Length: 379
Image 1 (tube, one colour):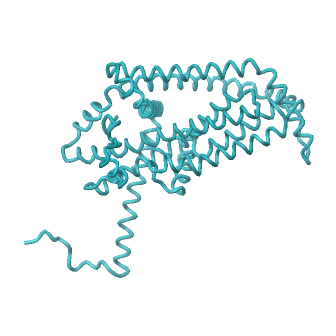
Image 2: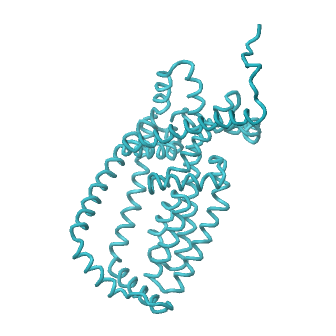
């Protein structure tokens, strides 16, 4: 007796076999596409919750090493709360400084920007409206569309309230993820059927390692880019060097689109505070920094965690932007990387794709493993 139930009369070769295999593959692809569409639709229904959870996971991945450092001298819960409080103090201090700096120079900046744009318009070989003409047209448009402007302002206020809700919920979740995320994950896995628990544990482990590695890596890259940009802009004598440094830091988290926006903003602000030559030099310098980011820092620091071909990354960012705008562009790469890591891990359940020869050599030499700073697969 054997367990071979293959039909000996089935023809697996020739045109009919290829058609059958192609049909099976097509149905599987349609099924996967249907699942993806369903997941995207469900996320759209609870977008606020999804964004809050995603932001909480990002904060958890970034703050966990700091919390482990505080854990040496403080109780676990207090150490994790102290790491979150540290982040709030740093972000709050930078935000206050940036806002106060821009507010104190707003009148001068607007006047210099107007004169700079007018000077640029005169140098162009074609006719461009001056700032006075723009203001006149803007006033006419505002009078004709005042109702729409008011509606947009109300929509903006509603969006600001939603954003505040997301931030508060994310902070609340981060505290629990930092202090007991491993327990939450183990409880969730325990509710699944026993035959599925091993796969979910392995998939969660691979997904979290990829997500946390990418998040910490991109945060380090953003800090390096912001440092280089701050030094360069300070050398150029830009009075808004620190605010632009914050812009560069935030732009790194938006793949492909963010660096371009940072270059444009830096050049325009420099034009407002200096002259055309300084703006061109700043644009060139910021482009060099963006190239260092794309060709040196990103491959070395986040390339191992993402493990995606540039074509796949470009397609993921494009699809994410089409489906969810700026939010989709931000989360497309890490989510795609996580899904790919989970797929690789479950495709070969008897092996650990994440463990490389270098890591084995490090273990043999007594170096800490990637698991050492990870509380659990779900945290």
